Length: 498
Image (cartoon, rainbow, N blue to C red; front, side, top):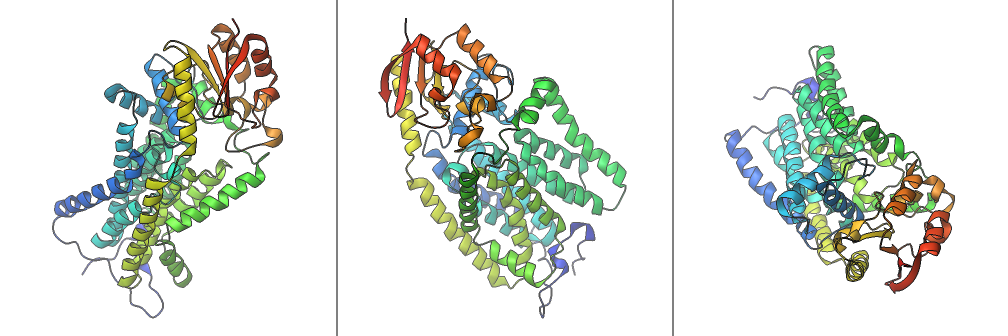
């Protein structure tokens, strides 16, 4: 007979539904090597299958375009947080740079494969946690369920090789390591998540809960965790410049993280993406709700992980679909744990429902048109035709991928109008303008344009709140030094007057 799981694991097997005997975790079958070899093959095939749509387009969203342009600038001698800037930590820009150095910078194919690997690693970490708590069958279920629901969002959010996808392996690994009492490794995993995206720090909440529940010296465990978290972040900060690193990743985003000026738009997006995620997780939610209503699951660390991740989604006050990706790993483990105390047919039902939902999102990704990409490709073609390889260009808009597709260097370190005006995700009204941009950005921007004026300026604002006629600096520049030359797909092209 198997021993009862230790209290520190907070397993859902500690309780059962009324009138039903608790079903213990299934015993291991075969050797661990054989188990993981078979599961790895299944999960690898499933990870590749679910991310097939990601290879369909050269780009899925502006975040990929921003990272691609950053990587080119870094490869050509740029310095992160000085001549190459963004509000994100450095791990993913460095990964893009490394991929471009090894495979060339003309395609994101290698990054697509890296994203497949990231999803596979996340599934394996969740499977390992579930197997450790509830047995072999639970491990298989967690890995498969995760990959089935991992694409349950708009394809622009789920299929892009961006921050959340590469953050999730670290968050899943942090909980796995804490579950086994490996505190230094858990801290290192939390640090990796934070260095991929700031909200990865949400994984620290379940880690600290498990630390508090674990037998042994809490002081020693806390010290090991702190060393694991702080050391990599401190080293990266020293490498990037402590003050610049702190500004661009923490203190410089105050105006960005606010509802002001876009309340209705943001609320509509939040409700829409919540509904889409609920559809993608249709196989997970019923068992979680069923057990939550009928029994005490005891999985406090998983609930805290989910709540902390939900707080991370709320933190940015924008509710982009890709923010919701970090809710999926704790939901998968909660559902897997709930299924261990429900009748066996509920697992079959969860898998079938998740598979059907996955098929719908897979078709969506394979068949959905990308009108924004078509527009950007037209602009890039026009920019290439009107400039030389050494010319600098300013694309005034929110699609930095134009630079990458046109293979032209940007005239400024600020790759989008959003950094200079606080426009992002449809924000409108009083919170958009020169005074709402990143602190100190406009003097730097004016100096860049004065030092090396761009040969071509593309106004792709198309009536949005950041249009040049609402920005005195840009309006004066266009009036004094440039003349209108063409209109391409709604974007106005300006060339040097001389």
